[in-house]
Image (tube, rainbow, N blue to C red; front, side, top):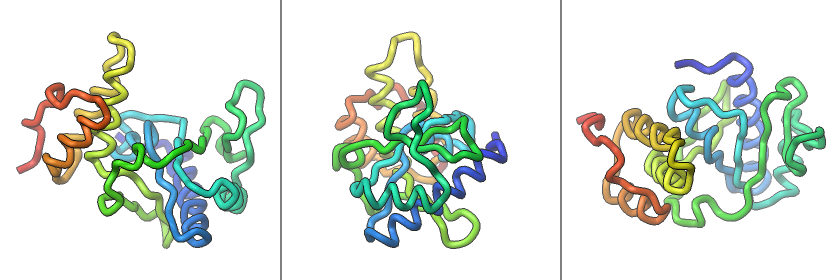
Length: 186
């Protein structure tokens, strides 16, 4: 799979905002949910919603504005979100609370760099797999998309810390037994 050009350009703008936020606060925001899954699966599961956790709302607003984003006050959109005028089909939401209720190990986060020094912060594969399995557990029984996402994330991971994964899946309320571990690279 590959990303649409506009998606990559938007990710570069988000990386600029993340870098500005981190420069001001000393802490990087983290991209979670469907957009993190999209990146980690190389576009196999796309999401136009970018859920971000950042503890300082004012610093985040300044970083987003400096990167060209604007507050989303369009009809039919969630108030308080952001969008980039060059990419109005995508929305950015600030999610409250700590990432994964504070259970994620920050030493495991991923920081892909986009053209230069700007980077995004993404959860570790284990955290996003656990999140997807937890989301699957509460989704409609006819919707297995999050389980499929978890399976593909497992297949794409270069390595997996099984003890950490087991703990995180349990904490997120998912079922580790749904995954086919034969896809793991040796």
